Amino acid sequence: MKLHTPRPKHFAERSTGRSYSRLFSLISKRHLLELAGVCIAIAIPLFIAVNWYESMSSGSPGGKPVVVSVSSGETADDVVNTLARDGVVTDTLAMHIYLVLHGTPGIQVGMYRFFKDESFARILSRLDKGPNVGSIEVQPGDTLNQVTVEVTQVDGVSAQQFKSALLHAISTNPIARAIAPSGLLTGLLAPEGMIGAGTYIFLPGESLDTLVTQMVARLVSDMQKVGLIRDAASLGITPYQALTVASLVQWEGVYKVNMSKVARVIYNRLDKGMKLQLDATVLYALGRLSGAVTHSDLTVQSPYNTYLHTGLPPTPIAIPSMDALYATVHPASGAWLYFVVVSQSGREAFADTFSQQLANEKIAQENGIS
Image (cartoon, rainbow, N blue to C red):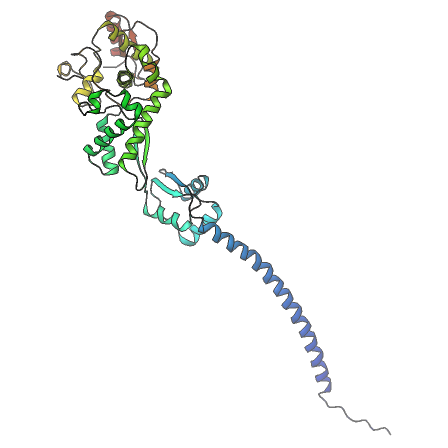
């Protein structure tokens, strides 16, 4: 009989345990490698995304200044798109992410100065503080007093400071100085009409002198574009007188369709030595901007009252538009001496004789024009 040494009863268990250990070891290594691969696959794009976001949001210093206007009713998305269009923001997605993380500021209507490729933090800070650029809208037909009021409200200067700065700008602009009468340069005449129509902005830190220099330069540019300075002599007047005519055309013609004919009426009356008899000059003498002119108004003692005085008023009475400047240099052909508004649309009828004028006035009354 062969004797068998009994095996320890835990032999099979130890053998099985080593097998499981090796199996778990192989599985763990594979899982670790897979997990490491997954982590790397996530980490690399995440690293790239974070770096992209940081690069977009931090911006680049030294960019050119940009003025952005925010209008009523615009949303934050609209503002972001505007900033991207003007080069302040280089990536709208990154900006939207920044707004989600940091919150959207309360955006006020107005004008803001930014810099191209500016940091998101500075953009939000500036939007949160509100507009930092002042603007002045000079409309055709505005008087010097109207512009003065707006400038003093926006820039905080006094009316006298504005007038002094404007006179200085005229005297230092070679073309403006050349066309201005001596009385204007010495302060005897107001610098009425010596401003170009359009929008002007105050950038932070800019001086009043910068503003008025732009105003005078724009007027000179507008006059040059229509040939007013060059061609005034062919009309028998000086460039400054042509500017005065343009201001009368602006107030009396109002609409482009009327202006060249109104200019012709003015020239025809001047050629015949007739008083201009323009209601606009009476309103200006009275310090009014609109309204009916009464018989008593026609007696106001003022060099601007063209019912009392022959010839042009001593200065322009308002700021002319480009259309008025052009019509002054290119008047329509005709023998008209009179005109009157005959429709609610502002259309004017022109007449050679006073009897024709009376007939046109009757048409105006029938159309409800007083």
